[in-house]
Figure 1 (cartoon, rainbow, N blue to C red):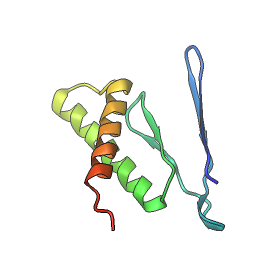
Figure 2: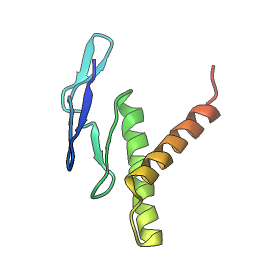
Figure 3: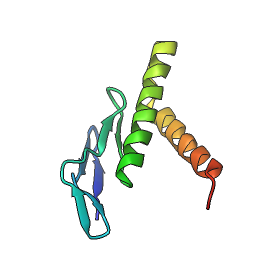
Amino acid sequence: MEYLIGIQGQDFVLVAADNVAAHSIVKMKQDQDKMFKLSDKILLLCVGEAGDTVQFAEYIQKNIQLYKMRNGYELSPTAAANFTRKNLADYLRSRVII
């Protein structure tokens, strides 16, 4: 099992994740980083297939950085969440199912 937890307080957020990448009963990796810093105020935590989550998180991370360079300001956490959700939904809808 892979675990992520987030606790929101009045003026803080506490997040934690395990470092294990496992498939079924096989522990493939013990130092898998599941936290990705998107900006100064936004942190993305991902679980799933190891290669897919890293590729998706880096794609989101680079596009949020590109947005900041093009527009001169960062996305808000709400806008970043909407951008992430839309990209994930578009990918899932366009995927060919065999």
